[in-house]
Length: 227
Image 1: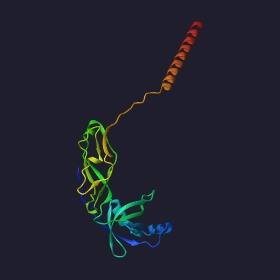
Image 2: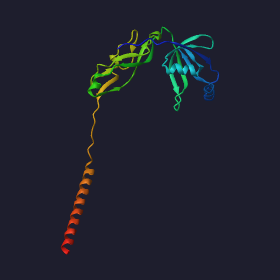
Image 3: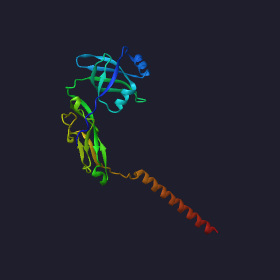
Image 4: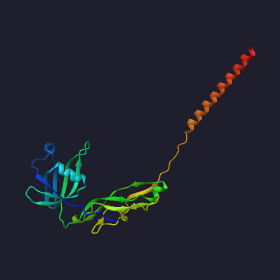
């Protein structure tokens, strides 16, 4: 279980956003931009507009760190902190960025990549994922794009916990060490028996049919006697 490659830090441009508020943000999105705010230590938040196509593509590829090209010509290293999406079409409608320093450790959520097929699945078990992300703290230039985790040795009843991961060099686990990432369990099939009421109704129906049959037989015998 090891860390993946160090995540690349991409460069994207940003423009100043003079007007804020719901109407201004709606017009901005209609023009192909995403409203954003850049926060940094000790400074007021800076309203920005981000080109939708390039930023959305970067976010979909799980970009977490960006060198933001600011309107004044400077570049600011920033972490993507919060993404708001439209609940209907899931398009990005707002992004919060946090300006950071390259020598400043910061907490990130990193994807866990499970490798292999558990032995327990050949025994009839199934794998259940508890979480496929963990929180770690590291320097920006040490951020892994994922952490690999071998699960091929797991048998039925075994689990992988966050504490079982081997942290990449320079990284510290921040998630609960006892958080279950993945487990192999046996699925039990329970067959439902007919309810007692249903049995009683069937029995009564059978008895009724028997009585009706007996009555019919008696009537037939009477008819024969009369003949």
